Amino acid sequence: MQPSLKAEYRVIAVSVLFILFLSATLFFAVQKRFSKSLVTAERGSFLKNQSRFKPRSAMKPLSFFADTFLFDGTLEETGALADSQSPFWWVNSGGRFIVASGTGQTIHGALSPNDSWYRKYRASNPQDTDNGAHPQNIFRLVQTNQWTNFALRLISK
Image 1: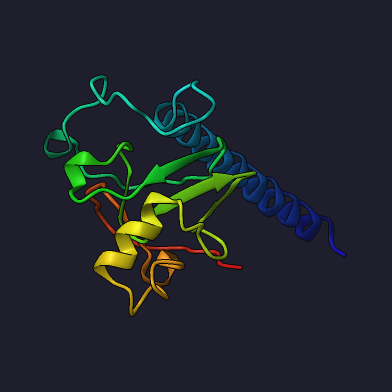
Image 2: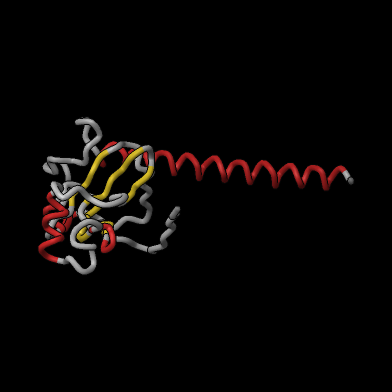
C-alpha cells in the first residue's frame, strides 16, 4: 500500500472515531437529562408530583428522546392525558405499563379477579379483554412530547 494511501485511511479512521465519540457523548448527555426527570427515588415509581415540570402545553418540541427504562416502576392507565403520573408517557388503554430490568412491558398473563383492572375491564369491555382477564389485549401507550423531525425506532420481543 502506498504511504499516501495509508495516511488517507488513517485520516478517515480518526474522523469516523471522532464522529462516533461526539454522537455517543450527545446521546448519553441527553439520556442522563431525561432519565433523571422520568422517575422519583420512591422505589423507582413514576413521578407522583409533576409540579417541578413545565405544563405539557408549555414544553418545547423535542428533536431527540430516548428512554432506556433504567428504573423499575408501574404506570397505571388514566382516563385523560393530564392525569398521567409520567410527564412522558400516558397509558390510554390496557391497565398498566410495567418497567422492569430495563424493559417496558404490558401486563403478562391473566389478571387476578381481585385486581381493579380486571373488574373495570370485565364491566366495560369483556369481549376484547377475555372478561377482564387480559386488558393488555387493547394496550395503548402514548408518548406525550411534541416532536420536530419525527422518526421512530421500536425494539419488540
